[in-house]
Image 1: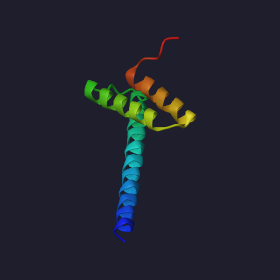
Image 2: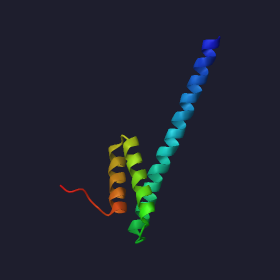
Image 3: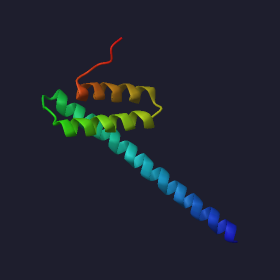
Image 4: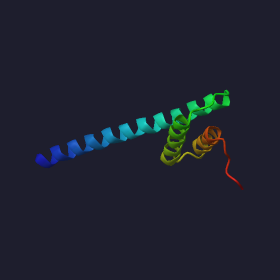
Length: 87
């Protein structure tokens, strides 16, 4: 009986952690896209905001395996940082 309870608590903790992680991923991607939109609309970001948005883009990039989403996140990050990778 004790091992079943332990497994149930462990499963509940794991599911809670995955939900928290998914929410954090979503927030990072949204921050990345929002800041990109602001830059494309002509707003100049403060260095702190630019760094926070760049970090959010990198976290969102690392968290997704969707190739299309990775492309959009990279484009947003390029908008934010004002640079493109050199070929």
